[in-house]
Image 1 (cartoon, rainbow, N blue to C red):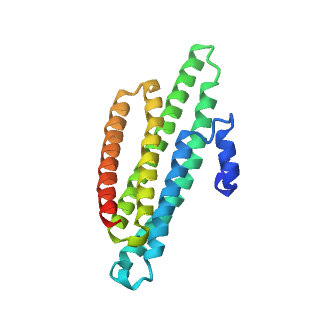
Image 2 (tube, rainbow, N blue to C red; image 1 turned 60 degrees about the horizontal axis):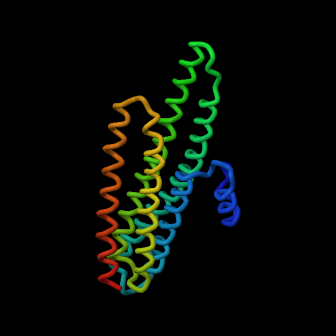
Image 3 (cartoon, helix red, strand yellow; image 1 turned 90 degrees about the horizontal axis):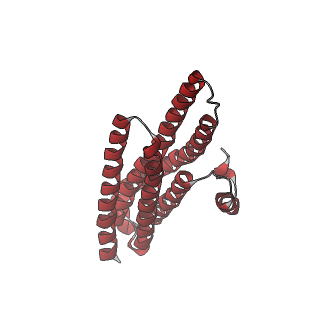
Length: 209
């Protein structure tokens, strides 16, 4: 399903609702973040060309470019998340009869688990970058569309937290405690910073509405 972004929206919803395990939570979180970035970009595009906002045009253009790049990154991460789950299932189904096979299977499973954890962490990192864009647009974006920046903020923060749930479900199965500790520190930092940016941006949005 590497061509997920080439499907119609109806098809994406249908396959997400089906018994197929992919696209799962991490992939859907990334897709939601794309919609959030789309809302932020819409506000940016509604701001460009307006005489009232000519002084912030360079910043708006930079935000639009960055947002477009992040959408491209999220598209890659959707594919990576789906591949990661498939790789985990392949490793999980490996034969483990002899001692050597058991060791090989466990090694493959642990690697696949880390890969399947790294991807949603990266999705959360991208979401945080998206929140920074939305935060800037809460100040500089067209006042007539500022509520849509709020939509972007809420969607992207939800996507970040949702992606991190996919981290939480994998960590108990991972045996590398140093890796677990590193991931926990990062995910807590990502969630905290996302919450801070959300509240900051929403306060500015409400002030301007």
